[in-house]
Length: 102
Image (cartoon, rainbow, N blue to C red; front, top):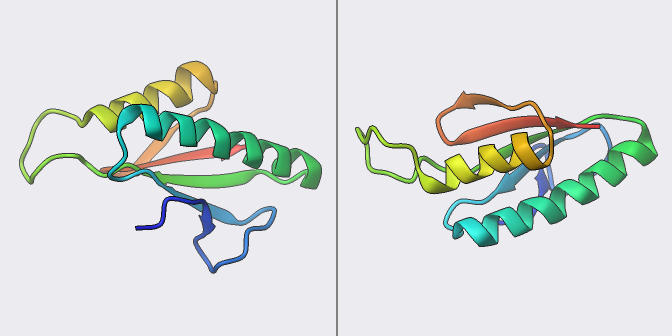
């Protein structure tokens, strides 16, 4: 399971590409630490290239089918993105969070 940012289109990472950050299986503290580090790098890349970076963050649902309570990881990642990183988020499908970094 890859936990590094990689292009959704291939192995190279470049400005203006869609990125995927896979946090599935990490504990909340590990995930938030990795998220901070990777977003910092993406912000630097976006500024230097003057292109926004779309990032899909995979956190998984954290539960078996049918569970009605959200996973702790999903809740923590969404809270961090909104409150600490000041990013707008969307959730295009369960367990996937989308942000645009500029």
